[in-house]
Length: 420
Image 1: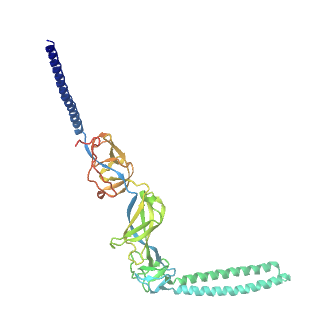
Image 2: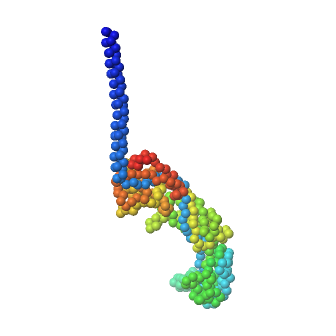
Image 3: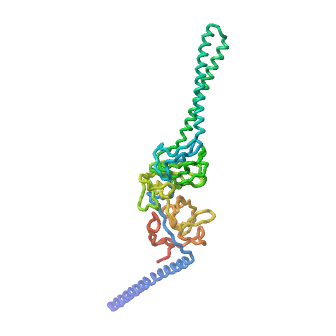
């Protein structure tokens, strides 16, 4: 009897354990399903909300490299350039240097016949000789009257008059001598000479042309003349060429005398002419915001021609490289140049920018952006400051797509990005 009762109790306990196990298994299956259902419901709500937010493509901005290349256009000019005028009026007897002739320093270019000037010089020399003869007489009288004054033969007043006449004659002789020297200098200008070694780039005279101190007043057969003829010759020294360029303010701190530069001319493909900066204005032009800079380039073989267009290439290190941003991210509003920056809060914040150099597809941002920030690429007109957005990083941007750019990769899990 006791054994039967114990058996029934064991069976009851076993059944209870089985029931409890079944309940536990049931709960273990139901709870995860409920939790998963809640997660799915939350995802569905999030997806529904996200679908109402605008999807924007963003690009990560980065600093440009410290080593920068800069190319600026300029016009070639000779290191020395001079217009040659006459100081004597007359007719051209002969000229000795034509267009394109290479001349040495002081070489004779032309001879002017000025008979009136020659006669003035001859007359001035005669006047000087006459004044010198009168001076000898005045000196002799002053010395004689000095002796007479000591013996009280003449009065002191009479002696003073003779002494004054002597001093006055000295001044007359000096004036006559200076006049002779002046006319001799003018006669010397009858021989027109080259001011320095170089090449004749213009000849505006011919034999028989009437010349004045202001230039040619006749009607010469002008070689290389343009417009009104004034100068007789134009001489340029071309063994060294110089180029004046305006360096943008953003690059001005990196530009200094001694910085190397290469000159390239389109008509001379494959040739680079080494040069360097010799001086700068040390002041930024407030109108153009550029620094006037002179670059000198050696031109020993004469391949570079004055007046030609050329490109100057610089390479230097910038202490504070600017931020590079795609040109398609630029926004123009009433506040000026702006960009929409998307932060970790998935909100678009408009930033005012100070733009540096514009490369076309990419531009430099001097102020307004920080390294690593995400800017909206090709923003729509409907985008507003403070608006919630869904952001997705633009893939496929490479360094080849924009100068000095950075590789852009898809960023998984960015807040606000759609769930893949």
